[in-house]
Length: 198
Ligand code: GDP
Ligand code: FE
Ligand code: FE
Image (tube, rainbow, N blue to C red; front, side, top):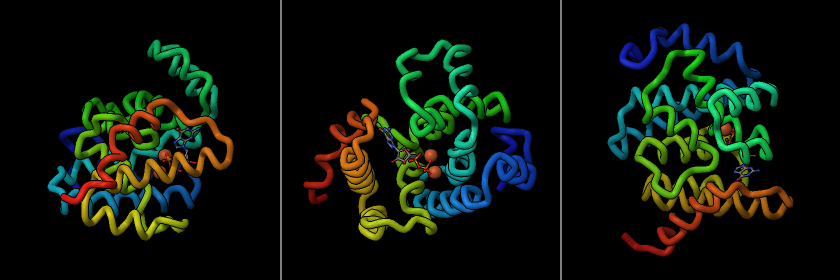
């Protein structure tokens, strides 16, 4: 994989920097997301280099302390309402700015896919969907519903997005965890796909 068009890191150097930022378990997850993303990219005709980079970097910011995200929200003058959320929401939506600072990555398509990987969006690009779904179905994932999600991902990417979002919302609601408005927007925009026979 040659990343020259987007960053000045070899694959080897990139993997080394990413591994240094996270636990071994999370690094294995990241590599699993890349594998799943490349399979989806092949199936749905998405750029494999962009899929690889977005997958490898999607959780780059996940183990950063809250202070890093609060500082980024200030420096980039992001919506102050973001401050009421936490790491789960920040590591994508705010993490994208850290990735630009650390890797010099400015490709909007890759950064948007990283930003949206947790909460989605009402108008996701093919790359956004590939990363959003790959994160959920990578080979290391094991939870109720993951086999259904894997099956849907081979049949219809929009259905996989809808299923994943519905499952995530149900899981958060059951635990009494606040649901980010962008997650609800994703649900509302995609839920109809579950009923459709294409
Ligand atoms: P991971 O980083 O690979 O673990 O996966 P994600 O980035 O998709 O999700 C991170 C965490 O955020 C998971 O525990 C999700 O259940 C949770 N999450 C997803 N959507 C929302 C949301 O709208 N609100 C909150 N509070 N958490 C969410
Ligand atoms: Fe994540
Ligand atoms: Fe992830």
